[in-house]
Image 1 (tube, protein in one colour):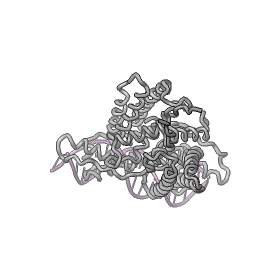
Image 2: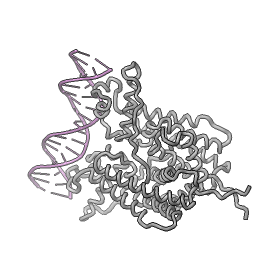
Image 3: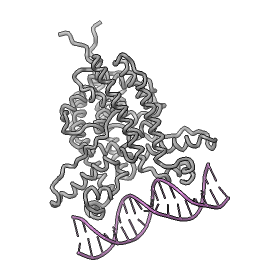
Image 4: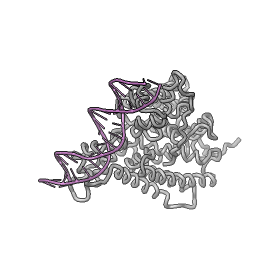
Length: 208
Length: 208
DNA sequence: GTCTATACATTGATAGAC
DNA sequence: GTCTATCAATGTATAGAC
């Protein structure tokens, strides 16, 4: 337990009515609503209400409610996959890079990643996203395993379990972290890395 | 990222038709379905189908779909609150007890806790559960703060953030842990405690 | 305790005027 | 690009017979 249901879902008002921008704005409001109430509990009427238009107006911009979800999930997945695309020789350093990258993406694409983490697999769009996420997870797990082989991780913890625990910690950021607070993205990554790698117990003081 | 969408939702078949037991069985199947598809995406017809009865038969046992959710959430919350009910003088030891207790409850009431962690606050039942959960979170945070005051936690990490990170890790167990695997509840708690308190980096070898 | 039948609201989505 | 009007399908829940 422990986390928040933060209401901070303000959509950064892009000037309205300008050509080409309405689509983005509708999508941003949709994603915010999906997070607030859940995708299934959000009706197209809810979305229309919040936007101050009718349902029909929305279907001029998008062909289905599921399309809105799909665009958001694709955004999150593409950003996450990018984190893995610069391999390194040193697996220990790469693990750190992947962890920092995941935190950075989570902060930059907070709404989209939040949505991704809640997908259960209903419908084709969600199923495709789940598969893509599983592939990502698998690649991350390989990085962790290599880091352990190089002696950067305690040998007494199963690398698959370690992966899940650490990314469980990282992913849980979506439940409470909100940009603009005391912690910026870098400080957040520092804290997460320190907690995951060094632990919360005070280290014994090194004799100089 | 990283976790699974495990299908392992088998309901431990209680003998059917015995008086007083049907209610439990219906509830167990309902909770399993709610986890599988999400509460909102699960219709009463879905539940009736899986049970092999009609919708009307279900309304003989329960007055609403929301009541089923409420019973499960209450179960999870009561078990979690029990973890905090034996205070100790030593805050460090109490923190360990709370963490182990949370893992134990999570394993024992895996479906109910999973459901609780996904509640967004739609409807009165969900709102009440969210409030109760916030109270629990607050009490946990106090335990962590006291442990830090007693020197059991690194002084350079904000206790509120530490609480969220550690419980983020614990709560993420609902996304992949399934009983009956290689890890039993105790071994799981050991691994979680070790990771959270000592970290994943190998400790420098102590000179004897 | 389970059934058939049905009430009644809401859902996602479309047609066609302005 | 937005509207009114409308659709078929599905949602929760109830009535009343067996």
